[in-house]
Amino acid sequence: MADDARGAAATEAPAVPNRPLPELTPANEWFWTGGVDGTLRIQGCQDCGALVHPPVPVCPACRSRSHGPVPVSGRATVAGFTVNRHHWLPGFAPPYVIAVVALEEDPTVRLTTNLVGVGPEQVESGEVGIGAEVRVVFEQHGDVFVPLFEPTGRTLPNPVPEPARPEPRHPLTDDRFEHRAVLSGIGRSDIGRRLMRDPLSLAVDACLAAVADAGLTLDDIDGLSTYPGMAGMGMSEGGVTAVEEALRIHPTWINGGGDIPGPGGAVITAMMAVASGMCRHVLCFRTVWESTFATLRLAPPGGGLGGWMQWRAPYGAMSAAHWIGVNANQYLHRYGADRSLLGRIAVNARTNAARNPYAIYREPMTMDDYFDARPITSPFGLYDCDVPCDGAVAVVVSDASVAADLPNRAIRVEAVGTQILERVSWDQDTLTHEPQVLGQARHLWTRTDLGPQDVDVALVYDGFTFNAVSWLEGLGFCGLGEAQDWIDEGRTIALDGPLPVNPHGGQLSEGRTHGFGFLHEAVLQLRHDAGDRQVAGARTAVVTTGGGTPSGVLLLQRGD
Image (cartoon, rainbow, N blue to C red; front, top):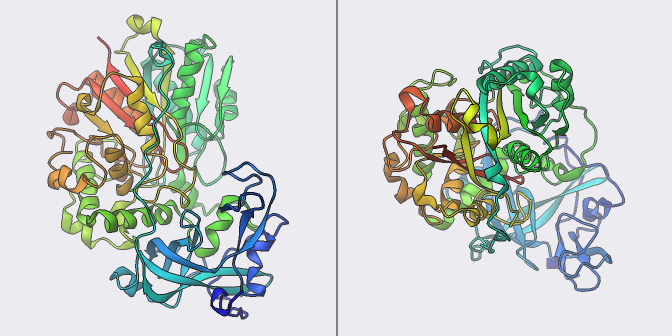
């Protein structure tokens, strides 16, 4: 290779930053040891020549199984970035710049990395930003050579295209499984910060409340469904097994997997089970205890990194705040928006939360408060991020034939959107919006005669303020890149506006219940039981639960 096609010579790096390092395996060793000769290598198909990252065992272009490491120039263009100012890892001190760079050989192939040789202030000011040409350098940590990138001084065009909008699949018939099920009951536990309660006890509280709300007994429940049902990180009570053992239910069907359409997928799969005749009443639940988990300083097992985190953790990209922050900066750059767009989402959430007795944060917040908050990772400050908490929410899905016999109004499901139309990746496909939003949003409207103009209230996932922007645009309430003008300084999304958004305060102010809080609020709104925050005359609600990983969206209606 020519001299300018190689990275700088690798030297033994000091212990700072203390990077989490990947575990070297035959499948990845060639990537993480490329710094031995200063050459970046990417998996390449030996039949069609396509490059792919991260490595996979089959070529996505021609389906060939023949592949191997291919030397590339080591030059790339910055496609997105975030300047991290929060301390996530011991020995990895902020500030530092996380970037996604698009390779010179194929800009659709990207790496998450750190920018070096440039100060965070230069990146935040735009002196070095999206479009900056960079070249690889390597930092050695024992046998591992971490590829980093430094600016060359050149500026190139934005390497990220407008998001692809492939046509979703349309239903084959007019029959809809959604119409054979209803949401019959809802329940919640206490929700708060550091409740210091056993998470299973929170789940039991919510489940018993939902069953009672539906006018049922535990003997009526013949299905259990949750998301994701995995232990660790304070995001589960132990799953289906723990709840079944505590309540001694005898289900004919269960779901406890994470590979479903987001947290709402627990409800969507339950609807399918009911529609198929497998179950009559499915108890769906979600429990978080992140706040107590963090207080107790529990930690998952250590060791070398594998899986998808090996491509992010070495760069300090530990949080969805980093991954989504990269996309948010690409959005602001592309569409000429500014942080006031995100601030309007945060202030609207807090204003609505003041009417919600369950919300954790109900104190008034102004735009000045939003801008004065401590930075987390650009463009996000503290109030752009949802609130880790303890709590559980449950929903009962029942056969539609029982709707007339319920003590409370049954809520119909008009349609769902679930189709995956983007790569299931945080950095390899959609960078203009949150990934796994645009496809599912478009799919929703193929399964109903209704449209965005028919929605009375929107419950959109707001793990970060930018998530809500992505869903509002993806669902077609405004065009891509048009949210700042459409929101109209918050008037459009206010409780008395044309499209009230997250009347309960969302996860930004009520607390992060991983999507189930939106379902709970939607049912209250459509029953007209939301008290001071009730949207007048609400009959149709859209609910999104997730993004980033395969997500889902539901269109709910007040039954006649």
